[in-house]
Length: 190
Image 1 (cartoon, rainbow, N blue to C red):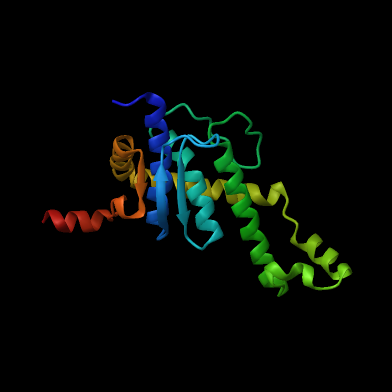
Image 2 (cartoon, rainbow, N blue to C red):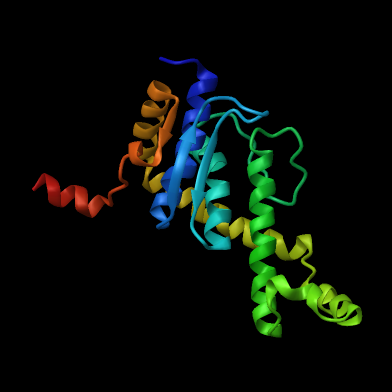
C-alpha cells in the first residue's frame, strides 16, 4: 500500500472528480504530484457556481466519509490549519459569485459590466451586490450536505479512482474512468 498521506490525497482528489462527473461536469486532469504547496490537484469544469462549490466541498467530504482525521469546518468559519482550507476558500468564493449573479439577474445588472456606468451608480450596485458571511453560511451547509451525499453514493468509484491515482500519479481526461450510475451497473450484470 502507498504511503498514508498519498492515500489521503488520492481519496481527496478522487472525491472532487467523482462529484464533478456525478454533476455532469468535466474533469480535465487529476494529479497527486505535489506542486506549489498543493498535495494534489483536480481541474474540473461545470459552468455553474453552485456545482463548483459542491465540487470544492467534495474533497473534504471524501476524507470524512473514508474516516480520515479531517475537522469538519463550514466555509466562512475559522478554518486556519485545516487540510482543506484552500478548497473551503474556493467554495466560499463560488457561493459568493452564485449569490452575486442571482442578485445581478434580479437587479437586471450585467455581472461583468458593473464598472461601465457612472461612479455613483457603481457605488449603489456594489452595495446591493455585497454578500455577508451570514448569507453564505446556510448555502455552505446545504452544499456541504449535497457533496457528502454524492460522495457516499459514489464511494466505490472514489476508491477505485484513488487506487488508479496511486498507481499512475496523474490521470488525463481520457484516462479517468467513466462514472456509471448504479442502475446501469445493475442492468449490465443482468
